[in-house]
Amino acid sequence: MRGVEFYFRETAAAMRRNGTVAFGAVSTAFIALFLFGLALLIRREISLIVEGITGNVQVAVYLTDTAHPDSIDHMKQTLEALPAVARVDFENQAAACAHAQELFANQPTILENVQCSVFPTSLRVTLQETSQYSQITAALGCAPDDTGGLVCAEPGVLKIIDFRDVLDRLSAITNVITVGLFLLAMIMLGSAVVLVSNTLRMGMFARRKEIGIMRLVGATNWRIRLPFLIEGGAESLVGAALAIVTLFLGKVFLVDQMAGKVAWLPLVRNGDVLAILPWIVAAAIGIAAIAGTLGMRRFLDV
Image 1 (cartoon, rainbow, N blue to C red):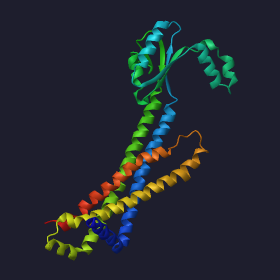
Image 2: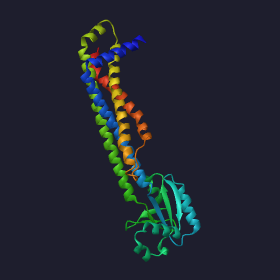
Image 3: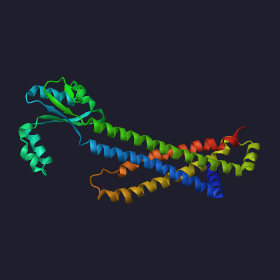
Image 4: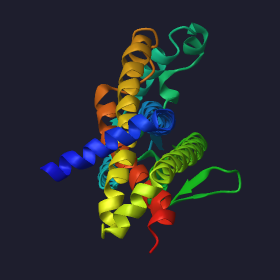
């Protein structure tokens, strides 16, 4: 127990002696970990927006008037068995007409000139994984024709609309933003490692005579290193704590205020903030470990 008290006493004394540098290290760790956590939350927000958009996107399999009920049941069962499919609903002409009347309720001219008989029956496929929409066309034996449409081998299929352009663009945008945020987070974490490492190096330089005496009396490298590792860990964890508090405050005072004003926009919840806390703490520990290894190597080479 006395050994533990000694190490923490040494850590507190070192941070007091190098208060300005320690403050700089804590500030950098805070900024880096805050931006790291913010990047994770932005990625989650983008995922929620994409889910909100694509959750209403259905692959429409339009059927011919001569499609046999047995063929329709077979297609429905085939599609429901696909991993990418969440649900398959059959929509007859009456349901399609009612849906069109609801969709064009503000445009009565269209409804007056279009008869319900022109609306084909269809299978409305809700996707579990929107990026795997191609499973639908593959299961029905569909291939692109010369006009850019799809020709299907499955009897009874008139046309398929799978919104592939929209889904491809959403997937591409999500991937680009995710990679960009990841690179930004890595740059900031690298900056935190450099500053914490410099803080430890300056602390060891200021105490180089004391370290030399400790080595002369037989102190091991770990005996010398541990107070500085604790110092780096303390600076990183204080920065992590400040980052976590700031993220929660931002969630309460910014995100929650938007919830009532932008009802259509899905927003991150408290559970999403809690989910990134282990990642922030793990990043703080990683910063301390790497910074300690780099910052003390010069002084402990035997």
